[in-house]
Amino acid sequence: RRVAASTQAQALAALCCLYRDVLDRPVEGLGSIPRPRGPVRLPVVLTPEEVRQVLARLRGTARMVGDLLYGSGLRLMECLTLRVKDVDLERGELRLRRAKGAKDRVTVLARTARDPLRDHLERVHELHGSDLAEGAGWVELPGALGRKYPNAGRSWPWQWVFPARRRYLDRETGQRRRHHLHESAVQRAMAEAVRASGIGKRATCHTLRHSFATHLLEAGYDIRTVQELLGHRDVSTTMIYTHVLNRGGMGVESPADLLAGSPRR
View 1 (tube, rainbow, N blue to C red):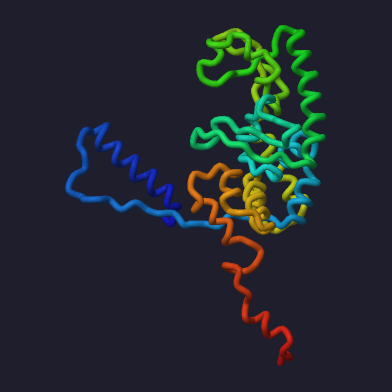
View 2 (cartoon, helix red, strand yellow):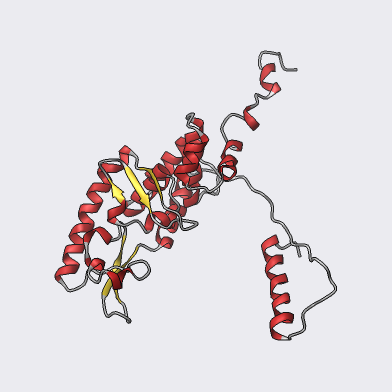
């Protein structure tokens, strides 16, 4: 039925599970069953002008998130789960805790984003103060940290940089908490901004991260530096961006451009 490789792999795993764990009749004698392999696709990358057009159509918190996705190369959930203590405005750094692969890393905070982010944090601080006054102000802490430091969940450093609008009651602890902003809100805003900009590319929030890496390489930054900023375990993952640089395939100039001065018939 021409389904995707991931759909085929899921069906194969379901059949194997059915016969092995449910029917207790493991399939034998088939040898090694070949696994379908999906195509290797190049990431969608926006030009600097296209990035400018998309960001200009984002408003409010979504604009602040978009600036960090592009300006710092963050994944969407890395951005939304930032804590106040992870932002260093003076040094121009963002510290990512337990990112993909359970790794911490430090990435750059764009100078153009520092003042808007400072103003945003002041508004969040006021919101946290009003929550505290109403007996709320809690946030979820990672792991068992809440038992080790019982009052840390109400402290300012542990608050989300992008808190949700509504509070909720945690049934286990009885605490009135705020979750971080849901990713779907930013995804909807990004999709609308891409449509309004009129660009002919299927751009998403993650496209801003791809664009961050590509534009750094185009600016001449070392690929190892870009690898560290993105948090890639292997440099081969980062090297995919060398194939989408705005210099033609592998940086080669087309021979057709050498005929630019030749008369056309």
